[in-house]
Amino acid sequence: MNDLSFSEQNSPRFVWPVRVYYEDTDSAGVVYYANYLRYFERARTEWLRSLGFEQPDLAARHQIVFVVRSITVEYLQPAHFNDELQITLELGAPGASQIRFEQRVLRGADVLCEAQVRVACVSQRNAKPIRIPQEISQRIRTT
Image (tube, rainbow, N blue to C red):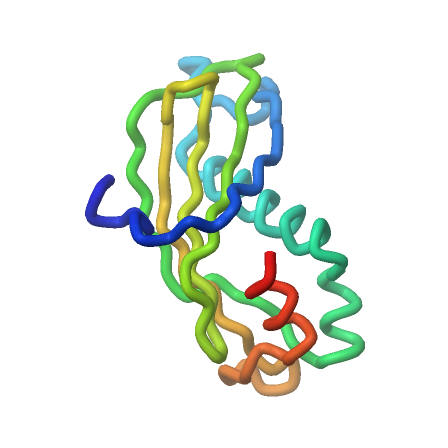
């Protein structure tokens, strides 16, 4: 997925481990494609938590939420029941109201799935784009 990578970016990589449960798979024992989106979402939540931000607190304190604006996904190899996976996240250049991520699902050294995700910061009141609060933006930029 070279056209989607942040090759110029040297950001640290966040890794969140997950095990594939039976409920994650289809009748063939392969992870259902939409569940990769759930893995990506959970990894972004855990990344934000690792920076000291809980989403309910952001909504209460800053009246903001982060929403997926766009996502491009490449499914490369299947994951199966009971696989131990690593969901990775690399930060692209954050903008005033958006953050770009490159995310991957790995099984050991094998890349199973990868995505480029663009997340927007929106007002909880009217769902319109809003600047990422300085406290959050600073923490993201210095990570």
